[in-house]
Amino acid sequence: MEPRYTHDCDACRFVGQYASVERDYDVWFCPETGLPGGSIIMRRSSRPDDYLSADTSLIRGSGSVLAQGLKLAVSKGMVAAVAKAAPVPDFALMPNGRIWTR
Ligand SMILES: [Zn+2]
Image (cartoon, rainbow, N blue to C red):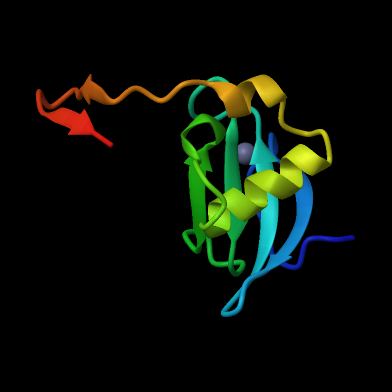
């Protein structure tokens, strides 16, 4: 299976394609961006900024498009299970001094 869209990161590994009701996505796994465990990128076109992405350790549940992309990457053995199991804190102090809560 080949990517449909141009993707500009040499570190990314192509996972596959995911079709939601509305959109078709190219799914990429990037081991070199974001938190340890890498990130999932869901590209919607070849336009450089036309993608969704999130750190694998921050993706929760199965309802979002990014969760479906992560599921695909895990099923292909591309994302370590340990990344999936990384805990997400209930709150954190952000660089701007505000408190982040989930
Ligand atoms: Zn990348």
